[in-house]
Length: 317
Image 1 (cartoon, one colour):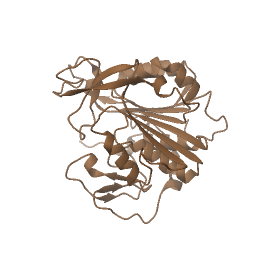
Image 2: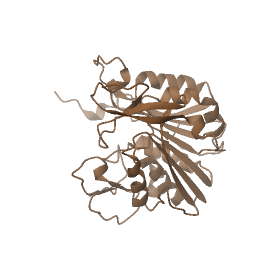
Image 3: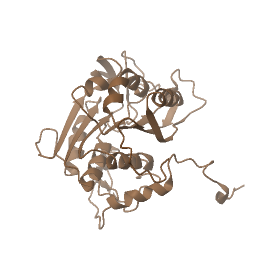
Image 4: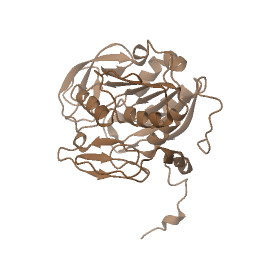
């Protein structure tokens, strides 16, 4: 039996944001996009190598707005949150991506920020997986951004090899290679990861967010995707985050973590602009519910102490 889809409304279909707000992305779109062999090209002109995701590669151009996602790695909710953060950002923007992978959200931020006309931009990628570190500079260069070893007057990029945690020290990182985007860290070596998958781990440095931000005065945006360490890392560095960070896009990896973040940040002067819960296998018997998550959630938070009071939200709230 088929049910009429027209009977569904926003109570049944939850995308986490107001669809009307996607109109503010139109000004960042580019025209006359041409295919480049091996690349996914979105409507903003951002180029991403298919080999980051599959060895056989691919070629595509997507000239339409990325709803509900960009058909490769990013959902509209993250893209729209990035747009809000850029438009509320300072003229000298500082942006961190924690659990950067190949730094797609730094590149997305840079694309919007340069079109907005910022005077300077500093992009800091923090990544645990040593195999992925070269992908970051490759993605920067593919999108006309300087590599971390290059000097450019108005744009600076940095790469930090570390796992993000609550305390400094070491962690064990494991993944099934660069095409496994669910790899994560553990405090002790183990033959299986948090998902119950057999994997080999490597010892990596661990840094708290407060340590990473020690020399910063203001950070316009932190994008965070750290596979279950998001709550403990934010909680441990909350004072630094409260005083320095204007907005956060947090990839969430369990319903438990989502609730913890909502409780912590709402009591700490942060506003949850929009959010979309993660999806998980409800019948999973894994001891850590994080391992049962098969589709990440997203929370977009703004710091009411630092966010501009005259920012025009339109239908965002």
